[in-house]
Figure 1: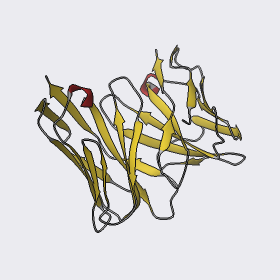
Figure 2: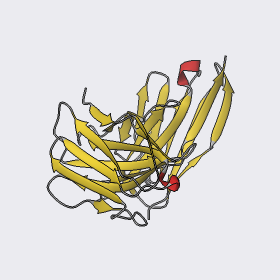
Figure 3: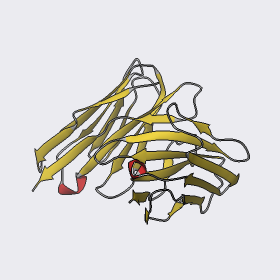
Figure 4: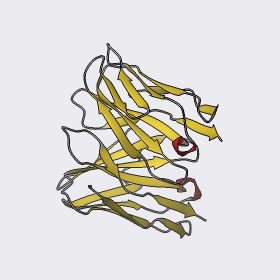
Length: 111
Length: 116
């Protein structure tokens, strides 16, 4: 089956530092989505990327989709304690109406 | 926004019994729903795709007779864990596609199943 790898598994940062998580797929993706899951909560949709090389921003969050549509990244500038949680990417293959989650990156922000 | 209501939030059952989990789309119609399970500190693993009015599509390695999925209407999908065993203890969560053009799937709040 499709494999979506995500690194790092954990990241501990000081408040104000930047944070990046990377997602890599073994196959070309139709699109990729990013979710955030707080401890004890359910995944919340953040964004979808569709186009090759696409870059989208949401305030302090920057999302990128690779040119080959096999990798993606999420970058948070100047982290805050509210950013704590696990960030998942989820990739969708062409002609498949279902997606597979990456392994997630757990972010901890120290005040 | 679109909401998927999932019940129960948590359940404890005895080995050998069956447990039904419901997911309802409250303000939209969900032709397709997805069922995932999540082990502690791990990612979400897709179990099956539930299609309204037809049989569910199961991922490789998921026993369809163990995890019965029914999607009888456009607003309700159910997952029944039959003859539950302790190894079935997990966090089960459903999701539904809201708007394909915008992407994004809305998730239920999840069900924590503990089999004793």
